[in-house]
Amino acid sequence: MALSIADVKDAHGRIKPYIHCTPILHSSQLNTLLDCELLFKADNMQKVGAFKARGACNAVFSMEQDSLHRGVVTHSSGNHGAALAWAAAMRNTPCTVVMPNNAPQAKKDAVISYGATVVYCEPTMTAREGTVASLMQQSGASLVHPYDDDRIIAGQGTAALETLSQIEQPIDILMVPVGGGGLLGGSALVVKQSSGGNSTQVIGAEPEMANDAWQGYKSGVRVAKFVPNTIADGLRGTLGVRNFEIITEHVDDIFLTSEARIVEAMKLIWTRLKVVVEPSAAVPLAAIMDQPELFKGKRIAIILSGGNLDLDALPW
Image (cartoon, rainbow, N blue to C red; front, side):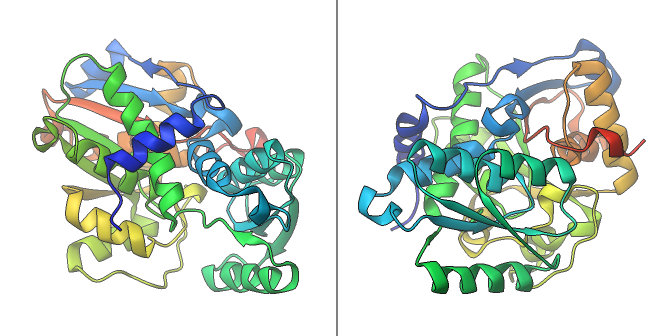
């Protein structure tokens, strides 16, 4: 059955006792600089420091107790792994996370700190998925996929659901970073199935060095295998099958941006909004900075997806 905004609302009711309703941040200086009104949904302040807490919490709390006794398993560059470990701990179930060996140390440490068992693999999707499959066969653990899972997509969509409820006036654009596509897919469902949704554009933002979602969106054929090379480690996942279906139907466009622009946007968020964001969270602002003429005079909401990074390895 197709996902809908009703599933997102159900997810929000399920996870609301456990997550933060994160604030909307504003910067008059950024508005002046880019000649538009920017509204930042600060999910870098979410539990585990990323929006991923939403989907993981919904998935784990959707599961029957009988299915949890053998634990849960996933693969993740960091944020989903930490989120799943956090949610699993609340239900007293074991969690194993397969992580690429080049994941940021801060994210490795976070996953371990939430109680997960970490298994490292080569930084390819084939290695990640193969290691997970082997672990599932050995332990019988339940897979909670980082993005290609209806429970995850519905949970991630709650970030957009909250955003629309917190912003009093209509917005012209909701802009969201895209990697595996759970946040963009869930957000698109919410916006397009809300009253007045047809007047609001949903735009994805992706690094040029990890542009599989853009390629698939433009060609109409999902890119199944791709080797990304971007500073935005949270966006290195390949666009999921379920999310590709949602995005091709409901998303208005996907924009690309360069590594240098991502760093520039990240600096601006740190200095103007006074909050810590990881590179992935800066990608939407970077895309706006690339083509400010397209966004002039618009009212734009951006979901800041996370704030987990190595402070001793900043990109400037």
